[in-house]
Length: 316
Image (cartoon, rainbow, N blue to C red):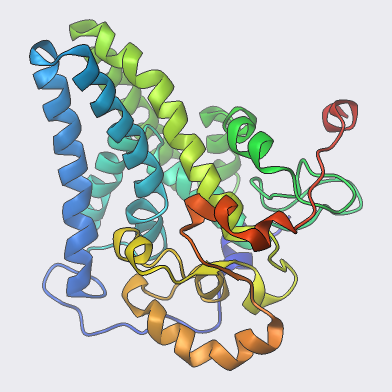
C-alpha cells in the first residue's frame, strides 16, 4: 500500500501568512496552543482537588473530561496534525507530549492513523473486503452501505490497533517517527502509573470516561462522513456551518472543505468554502444543520441506508 501521507497530500498548499513570532502559520494558533495547556492544567487541578470534591462533583468533572477528549481530538489535536502550531521543533514536541497526556493517545500515533483516514477518506471496501481508511464507515458495513451509527460509535475503539502494532506500521517507513511515538506512549504509561500509585481511585474513575470521550470523537467522525462520496475529492466529507459548533471546534464543521484541502489552515476555512462553493454545488456536497455530534437530529441522515456486516463475515 502506498504511503498514507503521500496519498493524503494535496497539490494546493495552505495560504501561509508571514511567520509570526513563535507561530508557523498565524497568530490565530495562539488560541489552540493555549487550549492544549489549559486542558492539561485543568486535569492536574482535578487530580489535586480530588480529596475536597464530593462524588457528584467528581462525576461532573469526569463528564467534562470525556467531553474534552471528544472536543480536542476533533479540534486542537486534529489541527495540530495538519499544521503544527510553532516554528520551533522543541515547542511542537512539548505540545505533542501535552496532547498525549491529556488525551491518553500518543499524538504521533494519532497522526499516523489520521493520515490513513485522509488517504482513504472513509472509502468503500475493495474487492478483498479491506479499506485504506482504518476508521472508514464502510469497513464493518455490508452491501456497500455504511455501518449503523451505534455499533460504529461504541465498537470502533475496541477495533483500533494496539500501540505496538501502530508503532510497527510507522516504523516500516519512518523509524525515527516510530521511536517518537513509543516515547510518547511510555511517558504516558509512566505518568498515569504514578498517578495511580498516588490516587488509584482518580485513575479508575477516569477510565470509563476516557472510553466515553473516544466514543464522542467517533460520533463526530460518523456524521462527518455519513452520505459523503469518498471517490469524489470535493465531496469526501459532510459539512455543517452551525456557527457555535464551528467557533468551539475551530471550524471543524467545514469538513468537506477540509478533506478536499487537508493542509488548509483552520482559520481560512470560510474563505476556502467561498472559493470552492460552485465546485461543491456541482458535486452535490452533503451538508447537515446541527453540529456533527448531533448529526442524528438532522432528518437527512435518517435517509442514508446503513447495514451491519454479519459477525461471521467480520471475523473472516
